[in-house]
Image 1: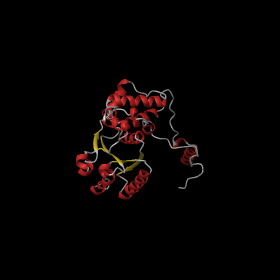
Image 2 (image 1 turned 90 degrees about the vertical axis):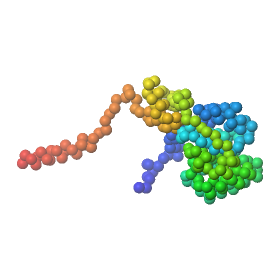
Image 3 (image 1 turned 180 degrees about the vertical axis):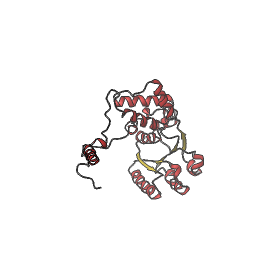
Length: 251
């Protein structure tokens, strides 16, 4: 069906962004649960402070901040951020990124190439990174939920540092819920036991927690009376049909 003028969004309207995206940290110090990597004396903290970021593989479960950290590493190191997904991209897409990175390098601009789900690239595709990582055209940051020792080429692993991200602990997840409440301006409709149960069921996945919090925030106010939707059987045509059937029966 073709969209009509009434169904098209207005120019000043934007689709609502998920809560997890709206709450994405804008500073490395706001990332929770990964202090062993991001603290000033930790590996990534030292790299950013010295402006000497090396290629790395971020290995960890879903929803612990891999994409956010990669983006903030680029910002903190003054590098252009080039994200690709191994699920949707191929060698042709990588060649475009390498060409753009080479052009930036001629004007003194570095490039951080972030590859999400890097373990999904086959061996030949992984090999395509090697010369560009070797000569510094790109700083490669890959994200994976799989063990890099089994999924990535040895040649690529020898040119990168594998950094392990942890599942978010209860304190980190509680901080995320506090931030979600601050952003919305009201508390979630949970008592202490329900809050702890919600945190426990997320299994350290911050994105899943925020998605659940967003659903809770969308619940109707308990003080607002609920009005059931009008059933089609109560429409104005139903009584007329009933009347006609009654007349037919009595004649």
